[in-house]
Each structure stands twice: as C-alpha cells, then as structure tokens.
Image (cartoon, rainbow, N blue to C red; front, side):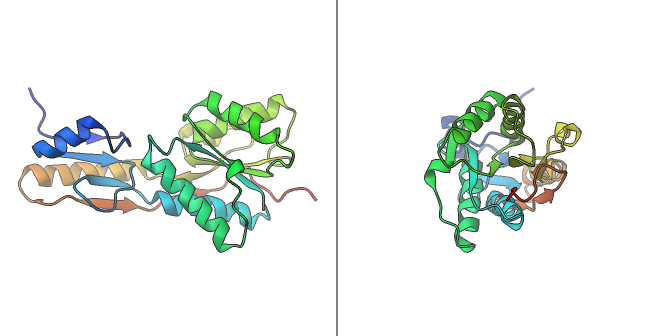
Length: 222
C-alpha cells in the first residue's frame, strides 16, 4: 500500500529527505513554507507580508521599540521571512533596527517565557513583542503575568498562526491568521492533478494572511 504522493508540513527545506525525493521525482507538496521558485512545490502563505502586517499593527499603535521572538532561521524558512517582513516594516517607517531585540529560539512555550524574561531584563526593554508563532506568544503572556505585568497596558503582544486557543485567552491574542484549511484543500487539488498528469512543473502558491485583533495590543502608556 505505497503512497503515490505526499503533502508535508516541514519547513526544513535543506532536509536530505526532501532532496532525495526531489531527485527521484517523487510527488510532494510543502505547506506553510515561503517557496517562490525552484524545484519544490509549495502551497503556503506570504510570510514576509505577514511579518510586515504584524509590525505595521504595532507601529499603528504608536510602538517604536518592538522586539521579535523568532524561530530559528536555520531550521525554518518561514521564520526568516516573517523576520524580514518585520525588519522591512521598521525600515519603511524610519525605525532603527536593533538586532538585540530579535531572539531566535524553538517554537515552544518555554522559549517564549525565557525570551520574554531576557528582553524585559534589558536596560531599555521593548514596549511590544512580535512572536513568530502563537505558542511563543502564550509563553510570553504567561511570563508577563508571573512578572506582574499587564497585557496590553505594560506590554503589547502579537502572535502568528491563530491557533484555536488564541481566542480564549484573557485578553484574546492579536495574531496573524494563516488560512490552514485553504492550504490543505489547494494542496490536495494540486496533488490530484499532478498524479493524473495534469501538472508537469513545480507549483508555488502563496496565500494571504489576515490580522486578527482581540485585545493584546494598545498604545504604550506615556
């Protein structure tokens, strides 16, 4: 019962497994990645635009010292593109980019807690944090409460993904929503067409993200 094709959610584009399947011509499609060209097929989101939206949301709320907790750039292409969108947004609005405000880590609650503690221990801490996924943001929110900091009065937070839990927090998490259902549906359609001989070349489709506002962002107190 061997499979004829795969839909894969990994973002480790340099994986030996992906390289082997590409060399053998085995049909597979990546989800969540930001692949714009080359031999890999992908149905993902425009992570650069998503990072830019997160930065724009915080700047619109008068934040100027904005940190980012990012996933490892080496492991994840999506982390890099979200960071690049955040950095480009700062540049376009005349905000100095401070590399000390960007921490790379795992996509875990613990990494969010540790990263937040490190950022708030700076001599000039940020007033807002863009987290590269919602689990990092959940860790930030938990640590903020442990430190008796109010959200969003003392620190504003934006996540990325819009996991179901994000809407049940207090306050609800502002985040960048990925169209996960649409990614899966489009990937399945492409795979079926591929296996029927309707697609001969790699396909790359990037879907649009959306800003969801729930209450974890407000202008910093004067």
